[in-house]
Length: 245
Image (cartoon, rainbow, N blue to C red; front, side):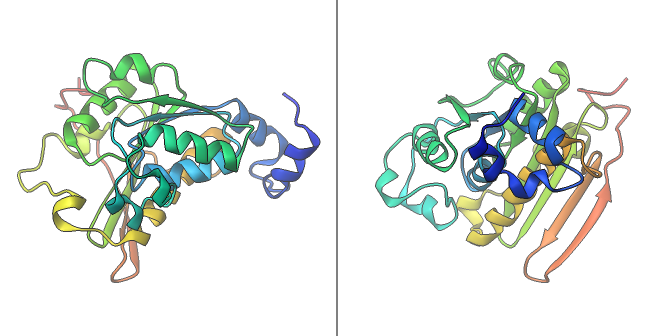
């Protein structure tokens, strides 16, 4: 897979990186990444993956852009309010990098359709705040053998984890927490979405380019108020209904 002169200039800072270089950039160009949820986490993740030269980016979201999104979903502009997110996102990503193919999926992923969509991609980023969607995406990734990069945030705290086989996301969250919160209910500081979404994109780039140590089987937790991070290991649950024996 060759690069045009413009692509060589565009990706120059990647090409001189020892951990990426030409072979890693070729892997990025050939990669197919699905982003589930084009919101607070999916928006910045999509921007950085498109900028990085990921060849195909799928966007799965049935929502439309609202004015309240713009406080943290920096992929959109006020003129996008009312438009389907996947359509507005595709236009902005194409403007950022015309070498990237954006595939819109204007649907909510669930147990009925997740596997059909997920199987067409190499890696999946889940930035949704609905646990039924999270479980469906995790189960689909497990069944199709895909890497899952999962991100979450609320108030001033965010987290990122990478799952491939065991342990799976259900080992971390076996069922819907009784005190589950959403950003719409408890709020979230806008810049935190950029931090966590960028971390998700970074983990995807590492996985695709085989660079460094991804957060496989680990969860990185970021406390923005205290400016502290910690990483915890996720143990495989032998009784997990999805990946257990």
